[in-house]
Image (cartoon, helix red, strand yellow):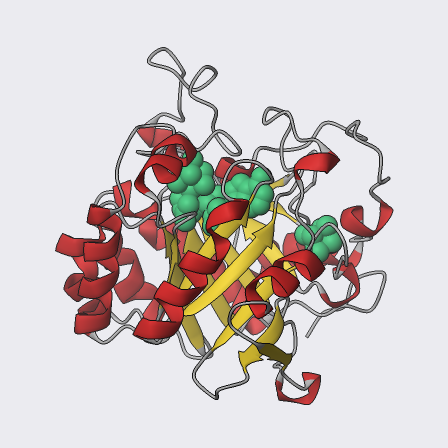
Length: 337
Ligand code: SAM
Ligand code: SF4
Ligand code: SF4
């Protein structure tokens, strides 16, 4: 077990398997910046599945129990099920999951489950086709995403969580509809406060709908009550609410209005093998170069220990509640949500 400067242990690993994506959500990869000519990472610079599994094994030794695959869009990485197969066989990985926009999920859900994926989180910002078309930046309707979710359910991936980034004036009027959809189908909807990740999404504080307001607006139509915090697992970042009728629950992720840096036990691994100790970090620590230069597991473990030992990130707690962005940060699609 290792501890950082604020005595936070390392428990979660988020692996971004690609910087590419088939969507262009304006809050993450605005189409005007990530156009035809944008140069994504060349294949040779991406970690191989064996390299990712090796680093995961080392981090499990240091305390990681939860592993999430993300991106970019993880399902656009070729044969991602092979990576899941490798990770699911690592002793000590108690929870193996993936966050996806579900565009390719329908045809892949069973393969992912068979390879050892346990559960899945699907990002779906609205059930309203027009709103969704704007929010994915590609004009795709919701039908294919919903078919993907159904396929995941049929494949036995459980529980299914639905992530929705809430932006005032964009999709906040469709919150309740999404909550109702999830409730009726037994999925857990999770509403995320719009964050100032990266430097390119033009984030403004007045576009954030606070978790408190989200809960109030849903509760006005579908009454909610807080879930006692004792039932949370360590490192749970969502504030949980259950429906008063006993049928289901939601989570709200108050990263802006109620930051949770004190409980943040996450390491992020980028597609080309850098580790980042915070979603808002400016620089990462390169593991690919030493790995490809012949470093032993012990050498790599030392670098990871040192990086975690120096960790003093608490960006969200420090973020000024002003609209300007305090510093240059890595982009979200690069290190995953
Ligand atoms: N492409 C996959 C997807 O969208 O599910 C995985 C990667 S995506 C970067 C991971 C999560 O980050 C998604 O649920 C997405 O909605 C969320 N996200 C991206 N930009 C965000 C922002 N500015 N504020 C809050 N959440 C954001
Ligand atoms: Fe792609 Fe996910 Fe970012 Fe949307 S949020 S652009 S789906 S990586
Ligand atoms: Fe963790 Fe950084 Fe987010 Fe704080 S701002 S919760 S330290 S990732």
